[in-house]
Image (cartoon, one colour):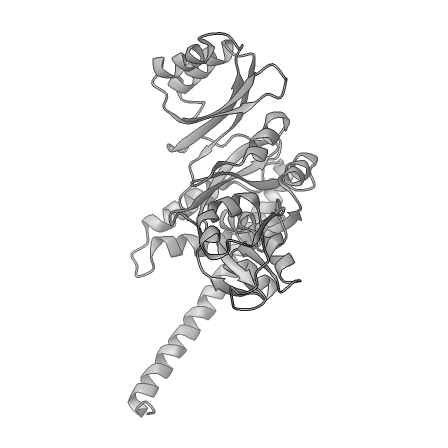
Length: 368
């Protein structure tokens, strides 16, 4: 049944009003962009960093504080991040190294942090992301550091040890793995291809539904999806974005064993690209240390933290690969090195360590 003329006229008027508002928005956005170009010229002349994540956070927080609705704050934040990303691209495009191919969760994390106007550089491994960032091919890199189900990404931790980059931010994503395939059926799946972490995060589901399928580890989930698009007997574990990218059916949605499955990603860069962010009031300091392999050394290492009231939120060990049963300890601390209690604790801790490195201090991520 067609709508009444009164309803149609009312709808037409509302659409005309929206068109007028859109024109005003576009005009204002272009005015903002022109001011951003002037800002870029000043930054270029003064030699100051173009991308300032603290400034992005301040702008979004101010906008959200003034938001009277009906738009929700999370949606306002997403819109303004894209506006600022587009304006920044006029100043200077941000080159960001991520794990490829297109469709990875690392790509999604980079877009959440930098906006879709960033120039993404797709790498075949986290080793390549670190190398591209350290060499200056990319100004920033994004790497996975921890999953809420399977724990730390060991290779990332090993790469941090001797790389000149530091952490300036983080992103926390809800990760949903989907079974992707050329045909919309579970029948005849001979192999499931995905990153090793994804295979582990879905092992109960795979054991129950595809017990005879080979589980084949590949460089990334998106690469598994790409390979699945080449062979009807293969399936991938990846995002909905990867399904669209490679033209695959989503045979089963969200098959990860734990419903609340999150992954943390670190944003890395050289210190000369962006210095340690100023304290935000809600920060994390990440360090890696090694102590002599003698009785009581680990206890003594942690004593300064208790003494000065510094909370430890992570403690992970990795073999030093020296053949002497030595270990590196990766520690996350609540707070910023500029805070007196943190500064005192780190100073005392460093004096006891055979190896000591601050990996970065950065604002804690908002869950996405």
